[in-house]
Every structure is written in structure tokens, then in C-alpha cells.
Length: 499
Image (cartoon, rainbow, N blue to C red):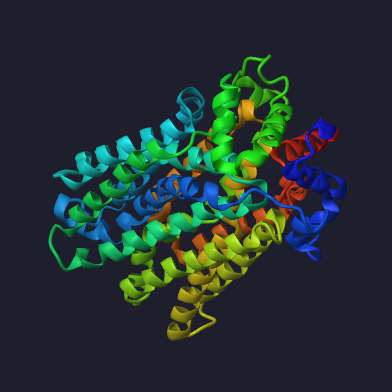
């Protein structure tokens, strides 16, 4: 096959395979990938796929917005709807959305494989619009919870499908960078929700405006995806090879279509002969990678990151810090870390960013633990607490936030990719649900010292003990700038078969 496809893209692919993992050494950098096989080497333009990726990341923007929309508004909502001071009810306003996301994520793979990535992203916008409208007009706790449940269903579908879509439409050498766009969009959504929520405590009923505002980007997502390309991987898997070629031409350009189709044919060889069964993910060949992904997502959430996004206002007010300015700093830290991840993802690689991120989170949590002890004065404790929280968010956004979804979308073969990612995301939402539900109650009962110690222990587990379970596949993806999805899957399978 290599001998028959000697255009520029094929030469580029073969060059990366011949150099193997040496091409991914940090000292050599991505320049070798682009120039190592001759000065005339060229790769597909990243500009062709950029607009499609940006549209898909609107789902991540909505995810971030709905994560943070209750941060500044929760107190006003609880007063207006009559459950102020009930920490369990306040936790339900947060966690019901996450319960809906769990349900949505379970079906996201079936939807993405059934109607395609593009239609799935359009469908995820519908419950977000309905749920936001229900929450904005709610006059009771139960009406609010029902609206949050609808929103959560869309949240469960959107990020999982967006991760698939971005991986499948991006040129290999910018796949990690484009994958980081989802984290940037999440950060922008969080900042947007915090910013629009500032007047909630001063203006009666302003929280309703905050929910209405989220309907606009959801409608834009549904509209603009109509003009975006479909995933060539899904089209090819569905037996629509001609349509896949047409989409590749839009994404890569005419000279690269033949080699892209040849690569796609290799990666899906033998898949069409077998009928997918969910049992494969739990008991079959892919179970170890599913375990790796589920563990990675569970540890990501057990670090306590979303407790910061949900309840930072409450924590800051308890410490006597103005929540408005502090929350904006949280949003800026998250956004800054996301930009750092975008720059370094295809340079340093997934492994370095992930382990470094969890290590930084351990240090940040140690600062917050110290602030809750008698070792420091109250004024110093406030600085340590706020500084630790900002460092925690920053280091999370650099690796632990974006890496898991990028990595899993790259590691699974096309036949099981959508359903495997949906299963791993379901574990993410289960843990996220209980963190959102129980955080305030645990903060009341055991205090910040013990609670932060628990979160810090999980960060340490993710960075140290967890190394044993998921570092081998991540090592293969240490810097896959230019490494084809098919090659990565082959290497991952070699590790699994040999373990």
C-alpha cells in the first residue's frame, strides 16, 4: 500500500513511522515531523478543518457555562424558590444536571454511531434549549431540578461527541492542539457564566436571565453544525466511502484524499465483518483500555476540581474573600492553563502534561490544607487558600482536564470508539454527580482540612499509583503529533496483548 501512495501526505506518514518514537523526543520537537524527511515535505493545511472544530467546541462552551451558572446564582435561586440554607437541596440543583449528563453520556455513543457526529451535536443542543427555558421560568425547586435534568442530558451527549468529532476531522499533526480547544471553550463558558452572574445578588430575578442566555449558543450550535462536515470516519464505517472522500477533500485538500482514505481503510480493516457488542467493552479485547479510561476520568473528578467550579463562591465568602473578583481569577486561571495545554500538547505530549498536571494539583492542594491548619495566621491562610485554589485550577487545565478525552478518542478503533468513550464518560459523570451532591454537606461536617486532604490523596493516587495502570498506553501517545490513529491503536493493542 505504501508503494502505491507516494504523494506528499503518504510520504509524511511513512516518515513518522520509520522514525518511530524517536521522532517524538522532546529535544527534536514537532519540527522533525514536518521537516525530517526533506525540505519539501508538506502536510494538510490546518485552516481547512479549523472552522468545523470551532463550531463543535460550542458544545464544550455550553458544558462550561452550565457547570458554572449556579456558582454566583445559587444563593439567589435558593432564596427565590424557598430552599435557602438547605445544603442538600442546593447540592441537588448542581448534581441533578450531572445525573442527566450520566444518562446522556450512556446513549451518546449509540446516537453518534446511529445518526452521525454532526447530527448528534445538533441533537445535544435541543435538551439544552428546553432545559434552560424550564430553569429560567421555574417557580419551585422541582421545576428547577427538571430543567437541570434536561440540560444535563445535552451536556452528557455534547462533550463526548465533540471529542470524537474533533479527533476524526483534525489532521494528525494538530490533533492534540485542536483537542485542547474543547478545554479552552469550557474555560470560556465558565468565565461567561461567572461574568453574567455577577449582578445576581444585587438584581432580583437576574438568575433567570443567566439561564435564558445559554439558549443562544445552543441554537447557534444546532444551526452552524448544519453547514459543517460530517466525520469521514463515520461515513466510511457506514459504507459511504464516496461521501467520506468528499468530506476529506473539504478537510485536507484534494492531494491528500487518496492517502487519507487508504489510512482509513487500514484502520477499519476487519471492523465491518463483526457486529459490535457492548460486552466487548466490559469483557472483551478492549476492556483494559476501557478500565484505563474510566479510572482516568474517575480520578480526574475525585481530585475535587468541579467542587471548585460549583462552589468557589461559597468557599471564598466563608474565607472573607469577595467572590466576584476571586471567581474571575478562577476563570482566568482555567483559561490560561487551557492555552498552555494547547501550545504544549503536541510538543511535550500527553504523558508529560498529565503527570505534571496531577503533580501540580497535589502541591496546590497541600497549600489549601496548610491554610486550614493552625500553622498559619488567618490572613496568611486566606492567601494560601486562594493561591492554592488558583494553582489547582491552573495545573488541572494544563493536563488533567484536556488529556483524558483526547487520549481515549485516539486509542480506540473506529468500530467501538463512540461507545467506548461514552462508557468512560459515564464514569466521569457518576463521580461528578456525587462530588456535586455531597461537597457542601461534607464541608459542613468534616471541614476543609479533612476534605482537601481527601482530594489531595486522590490527586496523589492519579499521579503516582495510577501511573502503573495507564502509563503504558499514554507512553505510546507521548507525543503523537503526526502519529496516525491506526498506528497508535496498533501499538496500544500490542501493549494490551503483551500484558
